[in-house]
Length: 198
Image (cartoon, rainbow, N blue to C red; front, side, top):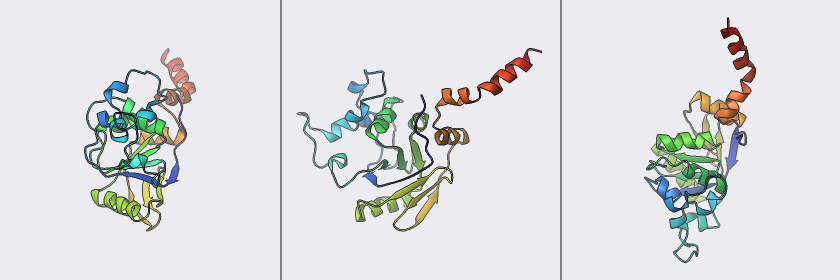
């Protein structure tokens, strides 16, 4: 399944300055029964967002109208816990296209890139600068430039470069998942198969 191409994203950001946010907090286990990728955004951070009666918790950031955008800024060790890919599905379905943190669990990081979310790992110091910029001005813009592998706090001009696997970068820029990547190489694969017969 192809996803939107990711090149440069400039957006306001939603701050979640909590460390060790695990996948059960991102999408609780009781919502994992569905096999389609749609609808998980409704239950993103369900137990933090809603009371038992379904009413919104006013003190949770996703229920605060002053914060919005396609970038989620999380604390250190984001996406730890079980390997459920539904956590990435929920973040994507809610509308986030990038998550910034100073450390990601490897499985969550890969699950995110497989469905079109760019996880951007920055230093602790730069992460704190992003949080400070959003706290000072909730509409502060953050720019994530995948081709340049660079994240910038637009209001201050401060930036930091980030690392990404070359294969994953190629797929995100082209909007490919693993199957799309192979489909794009179909002619080369067929040529190789033909030559290998002799």
